[in-house]
Image 1 (cartoon, rainbow, N blue to C red):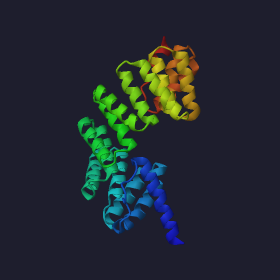
Image 2 (cartoon, helix red, strand yellow):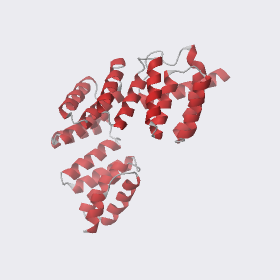
Image 3 (cartoon, rainbow, N blue to C red):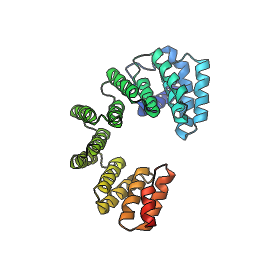
Image 4 (cartoon, helix red, strand yellow):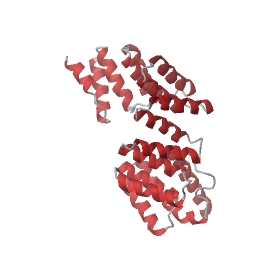
Length: 282
């Protein structure tokens, strides 16, 4: 019975870990050398899901002293360090994971995310491509690669990559990335079509509704932006960007009470709402 419970815990952990970083390569985490480390991964998963990064880091660090390092353990530790803002330590942990297994796609993805936070866009791009070289269907790496190229100002390359990925497999996050890129290229009608396609594929995508709200604000269609923002919040009441766009749209529609309420929530989430405050002071 104990062995059954342990196997179920491992399955739960790997499922959650795959959700964070994408699918594991075949056979990952299955070797006998990983069995001891697995218990630490399971233990760290609980505080990590609860947002207790310090406790998760302490458990994983202890795991490194008591178990043979595995790419799974090191990559999860890198993710925890990154969330703590300890980017140097995160880089070391991700690089150590790749030293153990150079073909471990989640470690390449994690290293790309670290470099992205550091602003090292070329290095981030290289690691997202490395993740795709190991697993060409890694959805997270595809989306991040497109977003990274767009952030670097390589908008044409981002559009080409995104359309190539979509030709292989349609999914909402890639359509959102395509829409963001097209917005920066000022091809607004095509951007709206991309967001609409994302909603066709997933009508419960709060991100897609929020992106529509943002584009509608850009186009000055504030009444429709209010509707899109509300649709996003109906799905995810804590969606920061949706609160931000709804605050801006409401201010332009002279619904000042709603504008203030949504702008406060967006600002509490770290968004700059100075445009709304300026409108409310007029």
